[in-house]
Image 1 (cartoon, helix red, strand yellow):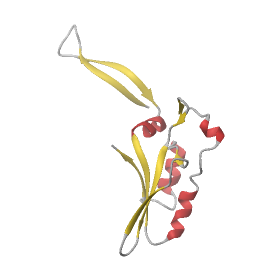
Image 2 (image 1 turned 180 degrees about the horizontal axis):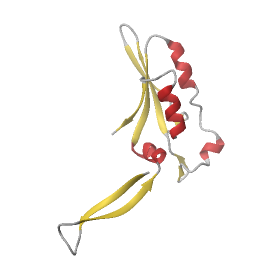
Image 3 (image 1 turned 120 degrees about the vertical axis):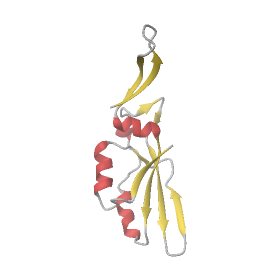
Image 4 (image 1 turned 180 degrees about the vertical axis):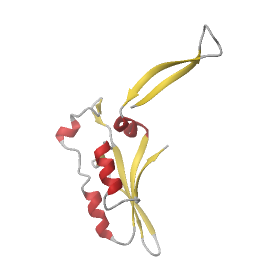
Length: 123
């Protein structure tokens, strides 16, 4: 759980602080709110892309999930960085392919074939 709070000096005792809860978020919701995108760094072996292709376009079930707010599904865009011998290319996979960073899906990426090559970029 991630808590967004407002810190104020206590009115009765100025040496004390008072916290007011603004919003509580699950870890998945916090990743969606504060994360910018999921970045996958690949070397010359294009077959590593198979691990990324498992990130499927949002289905109707996911669109009706708890991550929906005002008709917009929250998730992270996906960027793939290909690093070849003499050049580097960064490709954004588009708005239809979103990664919803649930704990299970993050663990699959961290412990899967792209171990150490995938991260969530934050502000």
